[in-house]
Image (tube, rainbow, N blue to C red; front, top):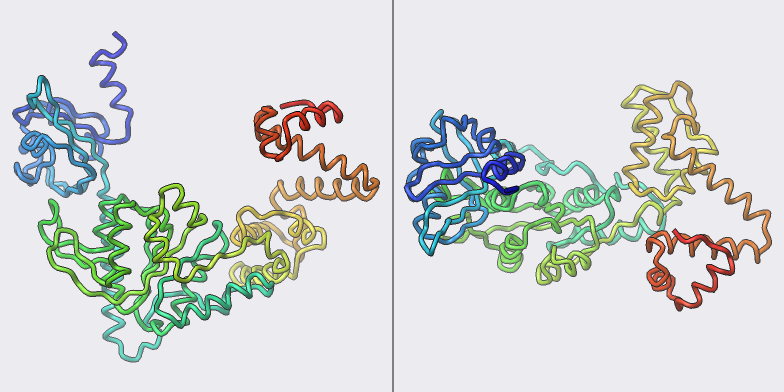
Length: 467
């Protein structure tokens, strides 16, 4: 049979998660390759042994596999820190399930993800932040107690779009209300959040940032809220980021990536200013201003079940939508000068400006990566050039292609009558709609918001080939 035990084991050896199976007596009967690699145990040394002989730091109460056999109920995403029989400290996120045959539990299976390195790094960062905060508290002469790097004068631009949002942010800095900053990647969300803290009355208090999409849910919870000894296997008494940020600002980046179950806890902090460490029975009062950022429209995140509606309304007290670079193209010359000056100092160059052709290409380009993309293009060009003016041959290839297409279109339009230009535009729009709809006329007609018969007539009239 195609699904013989041997074939199934081959398949399981190619998954990234560790998989262990024990029988009803607690002896390991299966150990896939990922589990062996994650826990640094040879399979032949584990299979056939009692699970607590392989993991001597665990006991029947703390082993998630043995608990699955005892209770019969599945558990999901349980964090567990333990020592294997070699003394190696390992942290995993486990989901465990009892195996039943004729309503009798005959074993258990566990799927685990090794987060040892991520946990150690995260805890090291938290510990360093704690040390830094303690050091600054002891340094009475320190006028800059925060760790925010930027202020509002670092936000470059004079367009009405950026001036408007900058003005709103300056007003928001004077309040203690939550702020939600959103915009496409590269629009400067982190820059605005730093500036908000620097301009606030909390400027001499801690500023701590955490990316909500960078950690597994169980680990993120312990990092944010802290832990008490015994809350899970291997847990110690440790303050979380909310306690470390007390009196200051906590920046939660990619809030739309935070697991929904954690969003409930965050809502509680926003509502009553209290937190509860993982496994603790008592609450702790904290005074933290929360600034959150999202790389998608928060309403879309709500509709797609990535952001709780009640949390959205609580965070959206002050909302700052950052404009894309294509919406503020008047700032491109100022940004170019700023980045040239920046990289002249860093690279020890004497670049003066970009050529007129480059400026035109930049102003025609849509900048999907926004200000960050512009910065990287300038940096890349200045690393490779020897002259003092950035020309087209210093730029990535796609700029040359884009500039040629834009120039050709401009020349073509200038040589056409209004009737011909409108006809060409209509053909191009129809072709794009057909392409996006994979040649389906009904889908294209819906996108163009015209009757299907009208679209068929125009396709025939203009002799458009369907994709």
